[in-house]
Image (cartoon, rainbow, N blue to C red; front, top):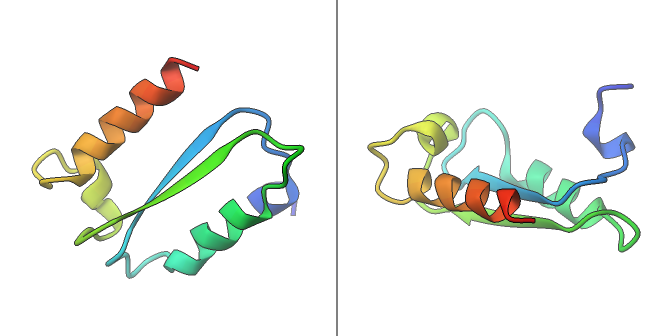
Amino acid sequence: AQADPMRLTLTTPAILLHGDRDADVPTWLSQNYQRARGTEQARCRLTIVPDCEHFGLVEPSHPQAYRMLVRAIGTLAAT
């Protein structure tokens, strides 16, 4: 229960990247998490990555996902 992110307050901005072909974690889980962040919590943005499965986000050869990941890190680092 203590490690459940739904129960924790988001105190730093977050960008969620979720592959639309993820067979390990359903997309609705990230959508529910993003929706549950209230206005009193840090900003949380969700991007669904097309044609991407679970590990595609960290695979440099994926045509879009890896660039999106690097961009998200840069965006967060600038805040």
